[in-house]
Length: 229
Image (cartoon, rainbow, N blue to C red):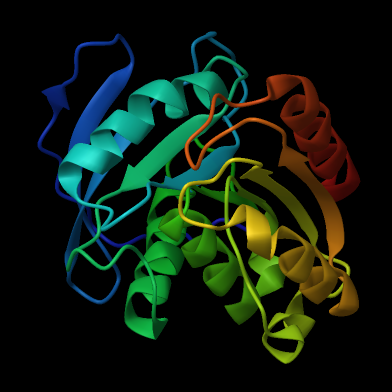
């Protein structure tokens, strides 16, 4: 159920080059502020849009987050999603309990808006952002629709046990220059051993960053949203 009293947010609306995109400073429930790039759904609809919180790779700084909002966020927006790409407050992606919790608070603030659907939120991330998405989901899987990690790695079965029965979409490039392709089997075994509902594939010939395969991601998104409804 939507909270009747939501944290106050401060908006500095700086339009980005593409239509429907903006940059906002959002006040969270703990009083801190987070810079967020928002990409609104491409198609006008009467219904509130589902929310995906998408985290960029590397440090998750403003430049990375802005680029992520354009090239991957635009893909989600064209399929009816409201996209929020937060900027890391300390250049450490959204790893660790403090940064994990800021994403939870961001979801609370945004789902209180009239144009965003309340209820569960999709988490997505690239590289460090994918690892962050898994960390955040582990803290309270009941809050989230699933995780799209493109890519991510993990090695602890016990850490991932809270995700038993939880949907995760995982893609890793077969020519990943950071060596993540060599960790693909380990990551798949870890998640499956923890009971994760896993859709995983190693992309032959692809590097660490790769063009999104919407032919497989879109059906997965439809599946998890239908299951939630």
